[in-house]
Image (cartoon, rainbow, N blue to C red; front, side, top):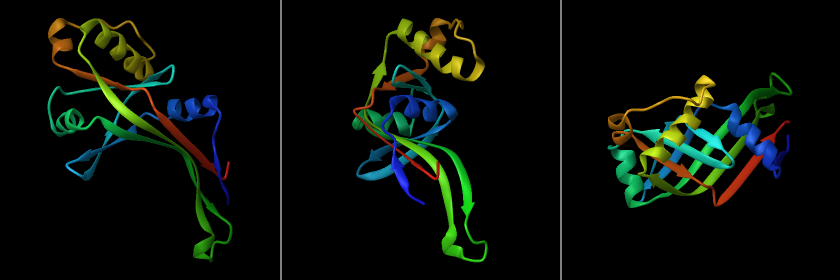
Amino acid sequence: MKKFEINQQEEIDEIVHSVDTCTLAMVDDGLPYCVPMNFGYEQGILYFHGAPFGRKIDVLNKNPEVCVSFYSDEVLNVRHKDVACSYSMKFKSVLFHGKVVFIDDNDEKERVLNIVMKKFSGRDDFKYSKPALDNVNVFYLKPEKITAFKRGY
């Protein structure tokens, strides 16, 4: 089964929108470190939120270069049930590469949090208290490089 590169932005966006969790990969003092993340996605920009402290934030403050992985539509493909090498996976995947940027402005945090909430609730009209906005970390990634592939589709 051949693997094909995806070059159409619409298909890339469809894959990103089809999943609820991505993997945020970072480099922590020369070693790989990755965490699963919920996210929002709008107009080619990926949005994240989380605690204002912790290892992830420490790592991103030292090195904002990241790779974000999305994986969807995985299905086991079997050509011959008794031949192990004939088993493979159909899948679609997208990788975003670039530097994350932290958002400090509370009005912008509110806008971004509503993008994330819309993905999971269908609503984008939530209101947030000042303490809530002050105590959440919001950041985004505008990808500098995107690679996307599909196999078996």
